[in-house]
Each structure stands twice: as C-alpha cells, then as structure tokens.
Image (cartoon, rainbow, N blue to C red; front, side, top):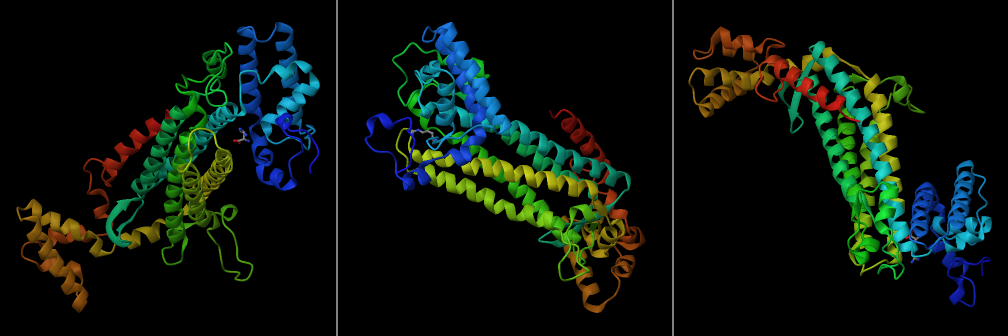
Length: 459
Ligand code: ARG
C-alpha cells in the first residue's frame, strides 16, 4: 500500500495499491497544465467570494497560497507528495498546507469540470503559439518564392511524378504557403470550439450552491459558456478537432518533406541542404542526408496515430465523465510538441537551402515538357483540342521511336512550322500560363502579392 491520503480517502478504509497508483495517476503528464489549473482556481475562488461562499479574508489567503504554489512550480522547488494523484490534487493539497481556507477552494466544483476547463485553456494556448510557428514557416516559404520569382527559376511541374509542364519555382513554393495557410484557418475553427468555459458544470449535474459560471468564464477570458453540464464534462471534441488539425499540418509537412528528400537526391539534384540542417552518415563519407525532411514525413504517422487513438478512446463512452477521458492529454501534448519541433526545423531548412536553378531548368527544358504548348498552338489556329492532342502525340511518338529531334519534326510539320518550333526553346514555356492562378510569371507575381498581404496580416 502506498502512503499518503488521497482527496477521496474519506470513503475508503485502506489506501490505494501501488498498481492502481501507477496506472491511475496522471501527475507525470498533467503537471504541465499547472498554470491553467491555477488560473482556473483563481477565477473559481473569486467567484465563490462574489456569491458569498468565501469571505474577503479567505479569498485573499487562498489567492496568496495559489501564488506561492505557482511560484514553487515555476521555480521547480515544489515538493510533490506521494499522494498527489494529478495536478488538481497537488495544487489543492499544497494550498491547503499553506492556508486552511483552501479547504473551501473546491466548493461547487469537481475535478470533472476542472480538468475539462484546464484542457480547453491548454488547447487555446497551444493553438495560439502553433499558429505563430506555422506563420514563420509560411513566411520562410514566401520569402524563398519571392527570391525564386526574381531569379526567374523554373522547374518541371509533375503529375504522376512524370514531368508535365514547366512551372515557376515561386509557384511551386507558393502552393505550400496556401496549404499551411489553410492549416491556420483550421486551427482558428478549432480554437473557436475550444473557447467554451465549462467550469460550473460540477461533477456532471451543476451545483445546488449559488455559483456563477458566467463570471468564471469572463474571468478566464472565455468567449462562451457551456449550456449543458452533462455535455460540458464529457465533451472532448475540441481535443479530437485539434488532433485532426495537427494531423493535417503533419500530412502537409510530410508531403513537403517527401518532395525535399527527392529534390536533395543526386537523381534530382534540385536543392542543396545547408550543413546546419542536414546530417552525415557514420559510414559513408560522401553522404549528406535530409533527416529533417524524412522526420517531417515520419512524424505524420505519429500525429495521425494520436488522432485515431483518441477517437477510439472516446467512441464507446457513455455520458458523462469516465476515466478514459484522462487519455486526452498525452496525445494532445505529444501532437502539439511534435508539430512545433518539426515546423521549427523545417523552417530553418527552407531558409537555408540552396536552389540548383541549372538542374531544375535543364530538367524543364526537355522538349516533351512543351507538348501542351504545341497543342495549344494548334488550338489557337482553330484546330479542335482533341485533334491537336493527337497530332502532337504522334510527333512525340515518332521522335521517341526513331530519335529525330522533336524540334525538327515540329519545324517541318505543315500545321506547325518554325513559329511553333520556337516554343521548344529553353525557358519559353515558363511564362506562357498566365491564366488566373497559373504558373506563368505574371500570374505568379499577382499571386505572391496576394499571399504577401495575407501573410503580413497574420498575427
Ligand atoms: N486526472 C483526471 C483526468 O485527467 C482528472 C479528473 C478526475 N476525475 C475523477 N472523477 N476521478 O481526467
């Protein structure tokens, strides 16, 4: 039997077993919520005083005690006790040691509404901080896109990982900016649903005491107040929402990571990674490895695992609070930490890598990459697109079969000729697709202006 009295020992004759403590205690991972827990307690006791459940002296003694507890936790001088089951019990136990008045602190409150409120505050704080880290990556990508536009760098755009049409590097980098901007938008939605105060729901049914949950919500800066106490203590949808939003970030980082790995390979040779953002091999001296990009790809598995794991935890739960819900914290913390770490490393990698313009452009200069432009040339002269496609396809087939340069075949063709053959010159295709949102330099410049405005408005 472990020593120490738990908060709920009154009803029990013996103490909890070691095995129960080892499984049941959440302190090892929920102590990181101490600021949110103490903020919740401050708001709660102010409300208790306002409604007459605490007198002024009791309130000020409890607030002093909470300040001391917070200071000890910040300084890491807090003396954790054997009986501290979770962060809520630890704070209350220590506050009560400091002042007997703290024995009234849990009036009209349960750990069920308390923990749900704490996790909401954590989620909101994490969202605000992760949005900033995401914004840094978007800024890094946009800076590199603006540089690429100025340097007029282009590369082959791919479909099916086959060279398709020449695109501006700026256009390619900007595509990632839009993906990560959507992630910020998703986090904003998630934040809105997390921004609901649930303190005052009690264990599950509210309270017989004259508590004022709206005052607590206002004190803590929440925009909304729960409507149903049963839902309030059992709802963790906002955790699942956040895990999904972070999985979406993870999938985006993973896709970009895969592309960076390809680009850094000798086969592509499109980029060179800075030494500070790549690793070597312990055996093969020639290697420079894109570990950050690989981990960006690998971490997505863990983020998606956190999401599916937690959805599975929730799916069979009857109303209201069940201890299963304690499983919300580890995936939440892990996903936030994982996304933060990965975004920071990717941002450094993007800021410092070098583009190999020559290599990108020579891959894009393959005459076959201009095939669509040849078909469009015919279309502009009134040929139906299907017919134009067939004509160019047969020239490509012939060139591939007998090795005749496509340029010569086009040059000699009655409906094409020298003007069309010019389209096969290196770099010509780069600036042809200037339709809205297209990859031509004119359209890309407009797009980057638009992005710059959005990015500058980010907090
Ligand atoms: N550590 C618990 C959690 O994280 C706090 C709530 C405990 N509630 C209870 N009725 N045992 O969910």
